[in-house]
Image (cartoon, rainbow, N blue to C red; front, side):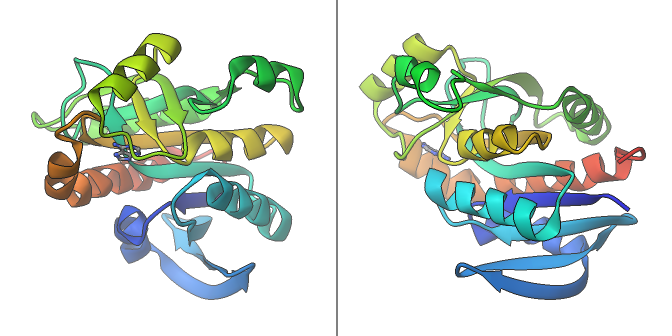
Amino acid sequence: MKKIGIIGAMALEIRGIKEYLVIAGTDNYAGFTFITGSLNGKLVVLTVSGIGKVNAAICAQLMIDHYNVDCIINTGIASSLDPELRMCDVVISDDVTYHDVNPDQMISCFPNKERFYADRRLIDYAIHACDLTRTENWDYKVGRIVSGEQFVADDRKKKQIVKQYDALCVEMEGAAVGHVAYCNRVPFIVIRCISDSADRNAYLEYGTFEKISANISSTLVIQLIRLMNEY
Ligand code: ADE
């Protein structure tokens, strides 16, 4: 049976999934706890990576090395960069990249990629999951997600990222997961639910929406796994 790796940066971003998981055991590698179990008949490895690209990259590589996962899903919350995306709307990654690494450097240095593309089948499952789960309170889009070592809560910084990257949302881990997945030829997807708008109101909005948005993203992942029959 195939194995699905799931990474959330914070405990609240995987709590909803953990509740559904029939837990088989836990392991510890490099200080990270990996929970194994089954969810809707699929084998799952679940972990909280902590915040930031390096933590996410370590977890993605450990999942591949120790569990031989067949795909990786990064779930959680993000900040909107698109005027059409409101709180609790969902972004499904088409591609991911870093907003704090020079694009020239990404091309000139290994693995010589300016961005990392999510798996087409996983995108289709995620779209289907959104169509089945959606309420009148939220909508979804498929597009670029950018990651960087910064909680963006500044109008000027937001404008600069929007101008340079044409992305739908910003967070702090997804591109690192995509980077590691690409190097290992493992399919991946990032699913994020909007918790704030990356501007001066970001901290306030974040406090209001982090839990509800994290739960929406978790619910979608559960639904996506239900749909993954051929994995
Ligand atoms: N994740 C959720 N909100 C964020 C923000 N404003 N900046 C970076 N990552 C986030």
